[in-house]
Amino acid sequence: MNKTNKYNPGKHHRKSIRLRGYDYSQPGLYFVTICCQNRHHLFGKIEKGIMILNDAGQIANNCWLEIPKHFPNVILHSYVIMPNHVHGIIELIETNTSNVWAKIFSPIRPNGTSKTVGSIIRGFKIGVTKWMRKNTNTYNVWQRNYYEHIIRNDKSYQTITEYIMNNPINWEKDKFFTG
View 1 (cartoon, rainbow, N blue to C red):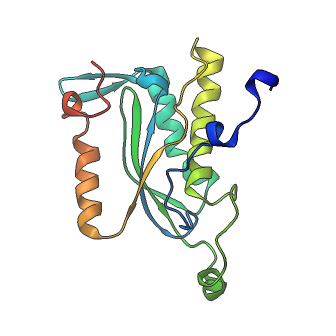
View 2 (view 1 turned 120 degrees about the vertical axis):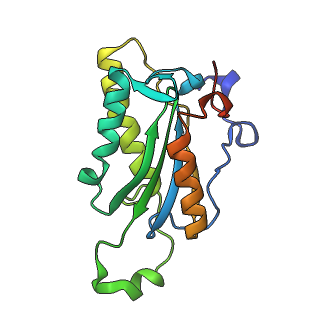
């Protein structure tokens, strides 16, 4: 940074949208939404309530389905690739049950561990971005960060699953719809 752009913690601080103190590596269900930069339609289009994936959308779909290959503690549930965002439910499972009590009483894990929701989303974004930069003129694929919701009960799970599955049909009513 030059002298005019000197770091100012009051001005340049980015506030986290994550639940303070929550361990995002612990087993559970997480609803995530990952948006394209400036909500550009990069992954295809909706026709008659059906998502039609273009090549980039197929890559995003493939990268999503490959998440469990890179993160064996993940089970994928409902998901949808939309023109300018991705919705999905990710389940983190305990992969080493030999020392459950130590994990329950262990302190919050440091940032960047390979089993957090954040690292899973980061890996997905990297996979899609690499393909996009190599095969298209799009350099900035994703908006910073992602939205998440911790699913705490079956009713919430059912409501979110229904929302995901109906997202293409309800596209024009979606808050991410940009016409």
